[in-house]
Image (cartoon, rainbow, N blue to C red; front, side, top):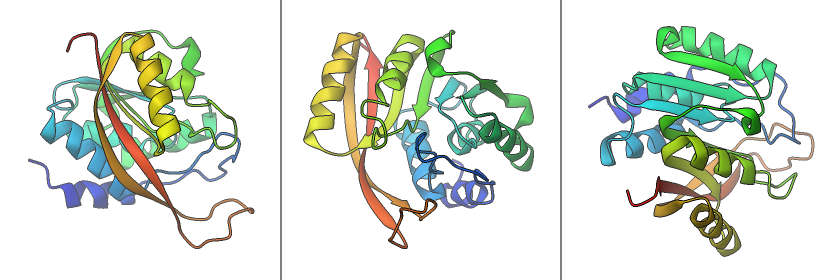
Length: 207
């Protein structure tokens, strides 16, 4: 078993987005949260090692790179922002996983392919309501098992359960966690803003 703290330290060393956009909700996922998500996927459910893993809206690549470190056979990170992907490529060099990670510049709506697992931290829809919808739909189209992070509230839970069922999936588990976000935009006032989030494990069909 790869030590969780070691993974967190490695992810913490990766570069962040140099010019994030609020409209795209380009927050870098904290290393501790990324490590926790990946450890749950890898060691509780066996969904990383030897698998083909996609990270939709990968940003600078922490989840994608972490999956590669934990033994994914192949990882594909997808993002609409070329600046984010340039940093992600640099980060894959820093983490020594270049040979196992592919980066695709694309809106997720136009992505094709199939994978074993999707791990994603999509926009929460704070700036654009329903922004996470297309990420969930695409994840259900291409993946057999999905790990997806969303704001924790009953309205979101009802919406996600309904959407997942509509597209042939099933919410297997919901794990609550805190997502601490540092101030990166001018409208931020708090030194650290903690958002309560839900990690969904979603499976396709009768799995």
